Length: 153
Image 1 (spheres, rainbow, N blue to C red):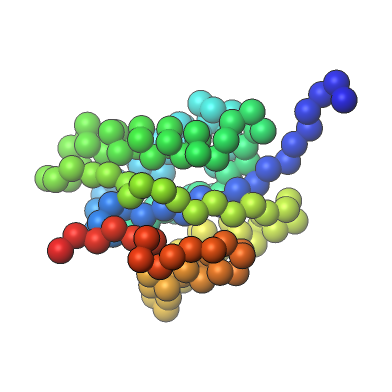
Image 2 (image 1 turned 45 degrees about the vertical axis):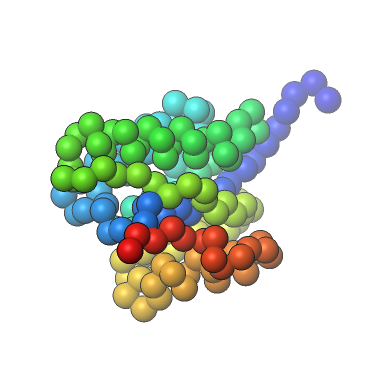
């Protein structure tokens, strides 16, 4: 085959290190725009994004030429440095190591995008601590609960 044709839609989910609520309203939208820009630098398009105070959801259309791990390394690393450089918080900001990634068909994109955009309403009823293991289970991902989150005492 002379060309490569792909259609990859991925939802990425990851937490703030220590599950702290550090994504604050006064810079949330700027952070989301910055993360979209980083993604586009790697020929990936963010179709939906929402940064909750303690975690983020991104639905991304991405090429087959990069891996999900590579893209998240760039998005998470660059956005953490940006938040710290901008001085939005009195303490250092970092995303937790690791992430969840789930693939979807094109027909599921509107439903997943709506889910992401409705995060504030969704989390009035379901905390992230319950949402994330449910997502993993529903997608057939094996995991050990003791390694899902890093907490600070």
